[in-house]
Image 1 (spheres, helix red, strand yellow):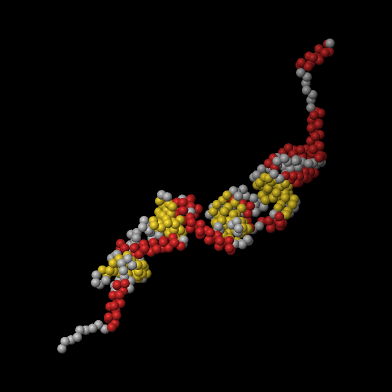
Image 2 (cartoon, helix red, strand yellow; image 1 turned 180 degrees about the horizontal axis):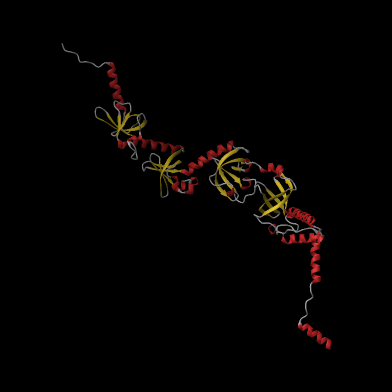
Length: 443
């Protein structure tokens, strides 16, 4: 009796068929996804769902000499089937070529749809920048947005990830041309539209000072630039914006005006600071003597910064001196320390009027009283004594003080002058005049 050959059971036959089908479905240059099961010096074993794991040789793992530690066990990666070897179906895979293929697909799609992609700048070459897209890409210098570069130099971009738009693709030649400028403009436009949609007057925003001019500073609000005028930087007068802000400084600002049609935003800094004028009625009174420095001259007068440095009071040209003043600079100069009397306070209008003329007058009266008091303590006082003391003070008074308006003092000065003239000796006659007189007598 002949034994019948042993037949495989149904489960064994099904497993053999499925494994065979899995191997036969893998085609050369096909890209499949697999799971890393082992990493060693011989390469990387990847489970791609076939009879056996596929092997990625070290040279097929990465494009730029990265070692086998570039992947770890459990990672899901794309691989390209290079070939299936032998009856056992040994599979040779390549991660490098799969990445290369996927990179071209991504670039072609971005070119077709106009999508913005990001890539790292790896080098600066003559004429532009080289970026890594999985393939080599080139950004011409005319398409680099230098406004984002520190010092406006191409070298600053090396090592930076940039947004880019694909403007030309030639796969047979391996050429990809990109634009950083177009991507930046598109990004700014999108952020600007979003910003204008939500921006309201009176809103507090944050921004970075990008550019300083003589009339103000331009602040990047994260989508567009707003103007911070010099007049809105401080409650006191400043000569240049650099006294208050600096480039790349981060600021909190108030939105003063929004012109959506023109795309303009006006900002204010002093509005979020404490307003010193609110305390002026409690700190100053009319008739009070204040001290400060001249900070600015105008045709109608001068501005005086009070000692606290928070308030600028105005001195009209008529209040600079008792005499008529033709030019403000003939009486005061910027930086000069002066004393003045407060004559008017209009805090709601942020305006204070002070007078040098009245301060000088009050100073004279005070000195006269002090002198009279001194003389009374020491003996009899005459009008001549007072006039003489006033004359001495007028002679010694600084140029910035007004002349005395005391009529008696002026009269005393004239009287002393007249007495000096009457008491002056007559000039002696010369020898020629004496000879002439003698000749006339003889005749």
